[in-house]
Length: 309
Image 1 (tube, rainbow, N blue to C red):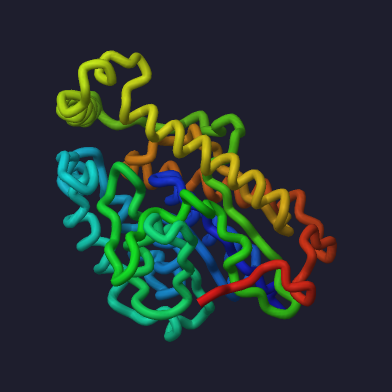
Image 2 (cartoon, one colour; image 1 turned 45 degrees about the vertical axis):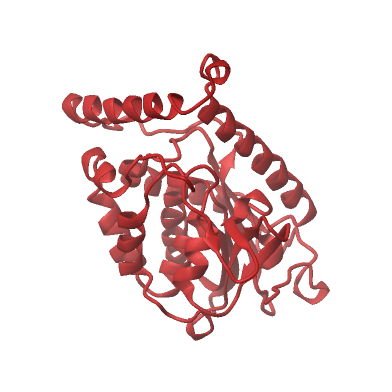
């Protein structure tokens, strides 16, 4: 009999692609994923997996190079966010159609943050795509999602590793994947880099974006060595890191898969192959120290994890 596992997938931009490698390795080792919760990119991968579309999604990610990435993610300033994500969202919708969460073969939960009502919003029913769209609305990047009474942004602002939102089953174990771990980057010796031409185009696009962004800022802010956009992201990253550490301490999983927060940048989706393999290696490493029957968490019957509608 396969071991059932409640799977929790953290947010982390392009680092979240590593979730694919982790899931594939868990399945390879005989685990049955019986429920999943995720935030931001974790919500995307969790949703794609629940729909049975993960292989197709992975293969599409492998086609991304830096040129194609910039054709999908338009780094253009607007009133609500820094990225026009229409093309990217349209592509994601090809893998996450307008299915209902309650019709998925396994329980699914996605987390978003309502900044108007100052609360966490957990999607366990309704449109899967709308849940994912809200969960990945990272501040200062993607536009927020308006609701009748609120405004939704990335759930990682409140709960970047939603262990307390995954549905638990009798005799399952809890597996959490943290793609923001404060650990050294482990890379294979034969890792290949992109061509010099592609590199130069990519860096030119990034440079042009930051130049455009800085011209909109007050003069004093422009002169900050840290850079305003960089400062925002570093602040949010530190906040989510601290919240993640507290969550893991409060709800210790049976298996914790850690991927370094320095393994790639938030927009480095062209590193899909590298990130999937990083997920595989991290999963193998975590499974090597896992001792079946020795649960670290309070267990299903004590109800340490919950799902709210």
